[in-house]
Image (cartoon, rainbow, N blue to C red; front, side, top):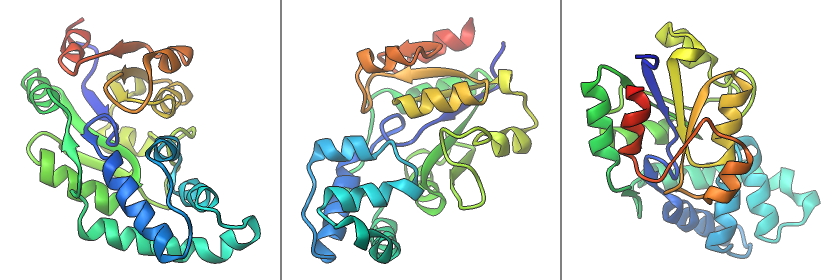
Length: 221
């Protein structure tokens, strides 16, 4: 069996969290006197790492460009505090994901979480929904490159002692595909998340699946 580790994206792959993000982002914008954004705008935002996410959020909310740097850190902290206090708000599991995680474990393959979401919030979500199925959490920390940068997977490889060809990234956007390509790792893209099959195919993922259980056949090959 080629793969020894499945590296799962969080938002749009393991969990349906876009309603959560939309809720807390709009509460944060309202608190600072800006306009609310649409759900579709949050679909665009979700691809960005933390270092870019909130700048774009403020722009979408109508903040003048010259004022962003003076506000963004306060908005990040306010948004983090809201989210961290209730990370499961409006979040849902995708059908079939838990069962697939369990089946993967039964095959002797580990599952870990890899996200551009804050480490603390990523850990809370993993513990709440998949405490027995996810063995480690690699969320966003300032000392590590974020997806899809070169080197963003280095800490996973270092901590597991595995080589790049022994792990498989599972995600739902082009960010996950580019994370894999930039680090010479195979990628499976899921169409149940926040990007369409047509868009995903343009980035040429190694595999594309419509249901979580389809991943099992890839792992058996």
